[in-house]
Length: 344
Image (cartoon, rainbow, N blue to C red; front, side):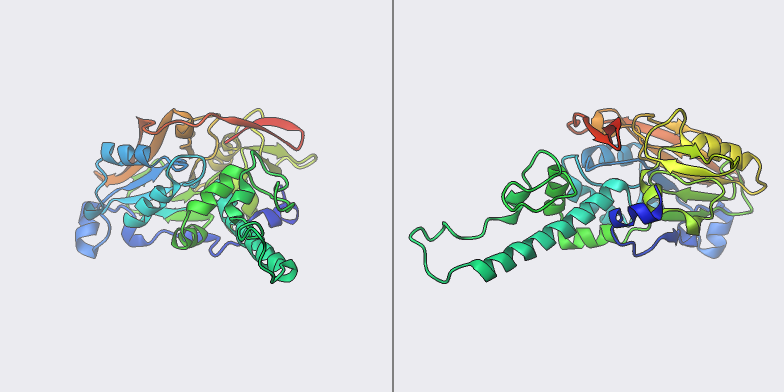
């Protein structure tokens, strides 16, 4: 999972790392009143996957109120597979939410570009080979709706155009229902969101919060993390002969990457907690310096959030869940690189 091998799988990234503005970070009530800083909460939500009703139920449960300074952050995979991907993006925009790009968001963006390229190819083909003569059946030689060219059960070759497709029919369907405005909003999301917590407040989360979709490799600076790995990794493989070197892996492995992250943080003076999603198989993960929020809402389980607030001289955080409020999706299975695994 290196940049050289996976660069073509990453839709162009406008912003790799973004810092959450100071005015959105919880501060003590005194600092907030004196300096106009945020007195609300950070509500960081796991993978939504188009499950808008579940997201609304979770926000209702935590009594999310933007007017009181609450700020919504989504850990990626806002879209795809669930029933209302456009609705999730519209709600995020309405609430002024922050988010990071997930692997499914990336795939939908790439599929949208693939669809546009195919449309151009089809139109060019019709323009070059089409006859100006009017056929006996006026509709017989009209170009098909490009959307029909993606109604295949899985990625492969389009049955009507012969054009190779990198993404599944489900991903193409999601790309087709998103508006240009929604796609542009999705494309502008960073891969990493950094939150620097106030130094005058005690915090078990450390000095910094990092929100990513899948994970980070310990010992590698944020700026040097591999974009593909940030959206796809689930475990680490130790580099032979290097006790501190790791290669990120998409497979679950014997243990999650968070185990090594926690061990690495134990050796550092300044702690960084990573909040992520992606690993639905392991569900909610609560490490010392890691919080995994993908609790498989897409498959009928819970949608999870960690709510972070300033109170009594410290940063407090609580994990809250709701049961899935949408029709669940049946997991599918795919074979990738010889390893059989659930696609999530």
